[in-house]
Picture 1: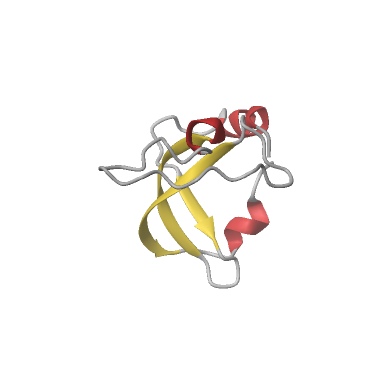
Picture 2 (picture 1 turned 120 degrees about the vertical axis):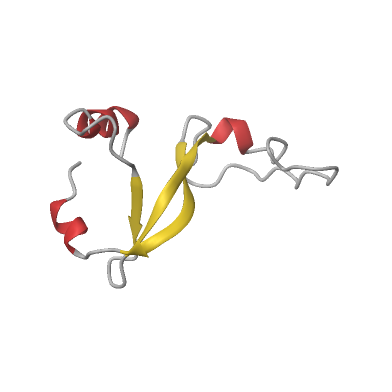
Length: 91
């Protein structure tokens, strides 16, 4: 999914609604969304590694990776979800 498609899909949603991640359609779970990360901000492992630890070495780009990729970062587990979410997902 492209950012413009996600923005368009969200346009009709309540701006004060929570954004959740649903995953594992055969055993659906829901988690909070911690935030977003743009690959170029973390691809070298230098950003957000924390503490005095050495940053992990950078990896070469994998197939399909781009520095502009936006990654939705999973937050806390909230509850079991519903398989119906996959049936009504908008794109």
